[in-house]
Amino acid sequence: MSVLYIVGTPIGNLSDFSPRAVETLQKVDFIAAEDTRVSLKLLTHFGIQKPLISYHEHNLRERGEYILSRIENGESCAIVTDAGMPCISDPGEDLVRLCAQRGIEMHVVPSPTAAMSALAISGLPTSRFSFEGFLSVTKKQRREHLDEVKYFRRTLIFYEAPHKLVYTLTDMLEAFGDRRIALCRELTKIHEEVLRGTISEMIEYYKEKSPKGEYVLIIEGASEEETTEEITLEKACEMAEKLISDGRKASDACKEIAKLTGFAKSEIYNIVSKK
Image (cartoon, rainbow, N blue to C red; front, side, top):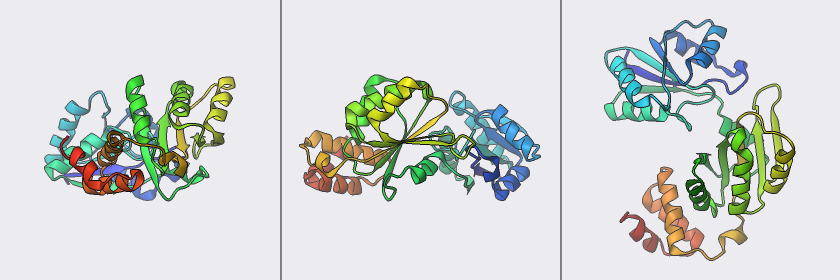
């Protein structure tokens, strides 16, 4: 059938698995999974018996070519992740890119995502937001990332592991100041938890209580007062480059940052376009 299906899986509650997702996994020839042990539990629960192959960040180059060769030879494949939508902070992004380059037909079967679910329940503005995923484990790169989004007026969404949570919150307090934040964990599960407060309050809370589970951090965007602080042309260009890396057209990104910083769009564009 020569098709790749991008199939979302439940982020906690198995009842969220759609009938269409079950039907899709039942009809494909094989399934590419982030962790075959996790996916096997899901398949077993729904009575689905299909060959599983592992596809994760450590084998994506070699295994990606193998998956593509099978699809190009007429088989259909579904890619799944442990929880939520493949390709969102996930190596599935690379497989989809390769399929797009080779003209392979693809279909998406949506599911809940941790980022959108957390944003919806956060109590913070939802009309405009920026998904930032995981921060780098390297201190310098983490700081650069936070500096890039420091002046964004939109709500910010990050993922974080429990063992790094307090360190990340500390870095965010230093970069952003004491903004409002919602920490979401165990979404859709029995012990779903959403903590709302300021960054400093969350730091103090988790100094006394050990973080458990994967977290989604929803952070208030920069205030009008913050964005009217003096911003250099260099910083404005970095902000524009961040928007471009997120998929915005260069002209649109430069126009938006020009409105935000007061620099001329042409000033920013002339520098950004030469890099």
